[in-house]
Length: 116
Length: 113
Image: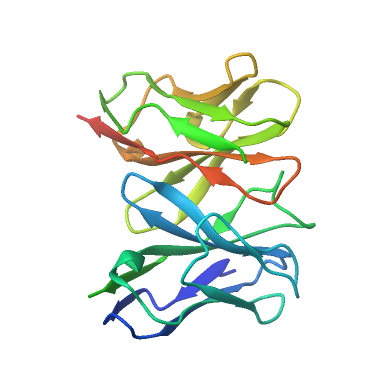
């Protein structure tokens, strides 16, 4: 049982380049999330998808787009990367049911992104 | 929206000593509280959660936390720590009226021999 799988593990981009971070879960969870982790700031929610077919902005959505491809997969896209987007990105899922208000999150191992 | 403050960014302790990691939250509605642990180069794992009922919550690895509504706190405790408890610990809060789980900045626990 793989849980939440993120690819790639590491990525280096030049300013202005684009890329997509992939995330898949095999726990049949309805809800999926993208967080970024920066030193001294904890985790901040970028976007989430409470269920297949829906996405909503979190705390820091600017510069990102997401796609909930199906129930298993939730991707995060950087259209034009900036140095301020250098961070560790975590995908998470929760369930069963809709929403996370009382469901713990299951995290992937993260993608370490550097933008030069 | 709800928010979380972890009062200590770093906590060094000696092995077998007790430890308390402090967490305060703010919310205008009822909340659900969580503690997560992150080991190096890994994602976060759930330690324990408070949803309702008893205010003393027991989690994995001998950790426990107490929900104090009047002080809006959810401090994490362990009576005797091990070297293997060295990690970063995050307090998180979600509210009953939204899907937005907010995390604190984290507390780095270092257990020394």
